[in-house]
Amino acid sequence: MKRVITYGTFDLLHYGHINLLRRAKALGDYLIVALSTDEFNSEQKGKKCYFNYEQRKELLESVRYVDLVIPETCWEQKRTDMKEYHVDVFVIGEDWKGKFDYLKDEGVEVVYLPRTPEISTTQIKEDLYTHSKH
Image 1 (cartoon, rainbow, N blue to C red):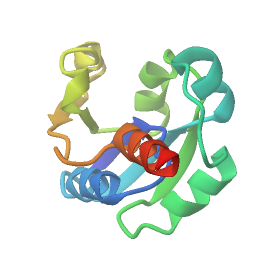
Image 2: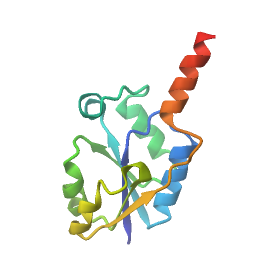
Image 3: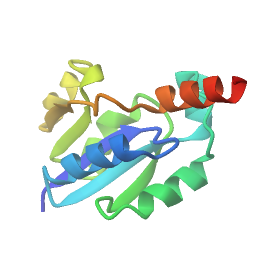
């Protein structure tokens, strides 16, 4: 069985996220999503989520491409996750290109997927904020 893992916040789940999850799952048989915890988002990523961890986890678990959701609590856990979950392929958006090449040392294939260009959580939040001002 070929195991694939991806990481992210997945707040305000949208079709760009689904597109990423679908393409990630297509690279193997079993997709693990490491979901950033609320603490990790606020303390290390500087992000404030609309939905809390449990809500985001429930949404991801309802997506047919996702087989397992685990918590992401720190940047450093990626190396240990590769071993613990017997990962074959690490997948992330291409805006991180080159940042996780070190995982190849763990015997893992590293794939940077193109983002869905016309959608992002940041853009949704900005649009909603702008729209609420009118």
